[in-house]
Length: 331
Image 1: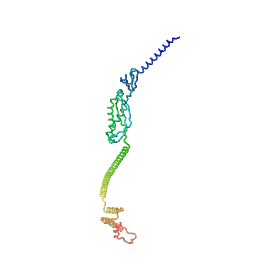
Image 2: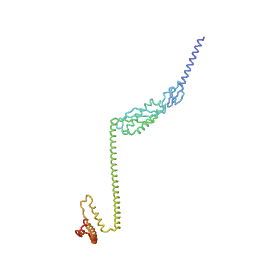
Image 3: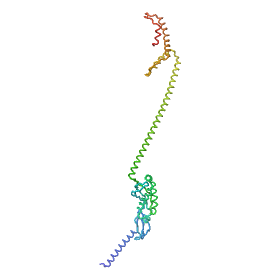
Image 4: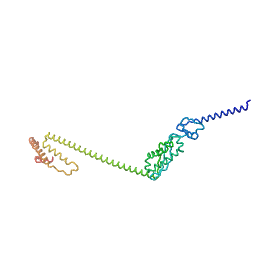
């Protein structure tokens, strides 16, 4: 049978070993600290800043070193609520801002400022009011790049001692009052209507100019065509007259043929519905005389032929020569 004192001693030893093992585990746990990537930790030794923990495995002194809450050292994007800002022309506009910043010094961000996010928001609001307060509404709406650059410069200078670097500041929205928006819409609508009327007038003017230019070019081309046609027609008529004149001279026609052709040409002078008065040329009598003399020269030859051949029956009445001469005008 075991001695009670020995049994109690064994239990005490076992308990001591367990406590020692737990103590060793706790010490190891508190002595080893793993920092995730993109974060940084500030170590305080006996209440005073000791060092900054970087991502990876870090060793600490248990029960002496204390790690403050980790800081995110990645670039952060914060959108601040709309802020009322008064412009130079005494109009209240609501402006939304977006700030891009990054913690570059964990120690300064921990000890130099109590709440760096709230400080950045308040500093952005005050700087925005200072910058926009010197601009009127139209300049504020059209000078976003200038406002963004001024805000970034001022914020970067002010937050540098806090261990924060401001990368960009953007104006997300600028909303003027509803009455101003209605007035701006009416103004823009009137401006668009004016531009539309100007463009319509310019188009009508250009169309009229092009139409007149086209008509002028068409008239010029038509006149040139008529001139060339008249020239070609005159050349053709001249060649035709030359050819006829050459043919007449080559054929050597007698006066009787010419007189007969002249009589055939006379009826053509009276053609047309507008010819109500026909003036007989003075050369008509000469042509009639020529044709009459031609027929008169042929009539005695015919009489000689009839005298040489005695008729079978005597004629009822002799044909006088005077009527034969008078038949020429009837022909």
